[in-house]
Structures are given as structure tokens and as C-alpha cells.
Image 1 (tube, rainbow, N blue to C red):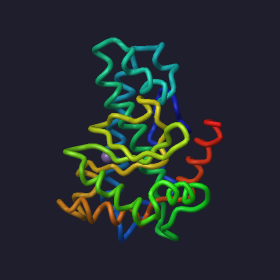
Image 2 (cartoon, rainbow, N blue to C red):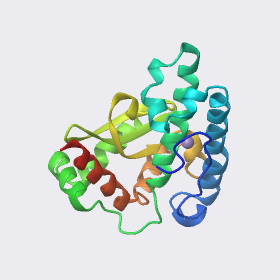
Image 3 (cartoon, rainbow, N blue to C red):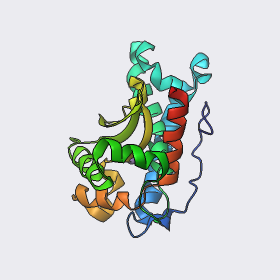
Image 4 (tube, protein in one colour):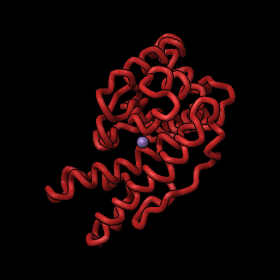
Length: 211
Ligand code: MN3
């Protein structure tokens, strides 16, 4: 991940805000990236400003070590470093709608574990719908296998040692302008813009690091 240390900046996305239309609207993307993610970046920099030791840690290291930080820092680091990391995984995990199917080794593993792509989507959607309030649903890699899990707020699965393949942000700010209260429609639309090349790359690097 680029810009992985203090001071954090909001990197431009590798696509335009309107490139995910008609599935995710340009206004939502703009507010989400330029306002919400920017807010997390500003808050994280503000927290780290007075802690030179912590400024040397990567974004991942900050999150992975959150429970070893002084009590007063744990929640801000979890919320803000998590907010930056999780949003980056979410934004980089999307691309303009193309061939909306997994490929390569990732597709083989999804088929092996879930039967077929549709069954995987059904399970993933059910989990994402089940997130109470704000949070994320993730496909992660865990010791040789894929796993679907959810996290509340800005908690990140890397704190528990899981490696993300992709994530969907189900905070309402990610879909309310277009999909209103219909989170299920948003999840269906998000599946049309998943960047499966990126997902497969993430999966391949998980496999390489595991074996
Ligand atoms: Mn968000």
C-alpha cells in the first residue's frame, strides 16, 4: 500500500468518481472519498502528531498493535487507522463494471469452498445484510482458506491476523444517496463493480505468504 506512514494523505483513486455508474453514483463516491476518508486521514494525522514513535509504524502495524497502545490511544487508532485502511481496501477493490466474475485461482477456491460463484454471493450478501448498524463485510484469507466475516464500526480484520481479499463498506454513507434504506440492492450493485483482478492478486499474495 502506498503512503503507508505518517503523514497520511488521501491518494487519488485509480478511477473517476463516475466510473462506477450506474451501480454506485458519482456523488456518493465523491463524498465518500473526498469527505469521509479525508476525515479519517485528518483525524489519524492529528492523533499521531504528538507521538513520534508511532509515526514510524505503518498503517497495518498501527492497527495490529492497537491493543498494546496506551488505553487512551486504542480507540482513536482503531477508529482512524482502521478507517483509513478499511476504506482503502474498499475503494481499491472496485473498478468500472466489466466482466463481473472472479478469475484464476480465486475462482477455483470460491468454487471449492462454496460450490459455485452464485452460492458464494448468496452467503456473502446474507452476512453483509446482517451487519447491525455500521461496519463491513469481508472476504479474507485465513491459514489456507477463504473466510467471510464482518466487523463493526472501523474495526479491521488485520487486527485478528486475517488478510483481506476485498470488503464492502455497509455504513449508510456508502449507499444512502442512491439506494436509500435498501442495503440489499447496494450489495447487488457493488458485486457489479468488484475488481476481480485485484481480488485475485490479493489472494495470490496470501497464498505465496502462507506456503
Ligand atoms: Mn465509509
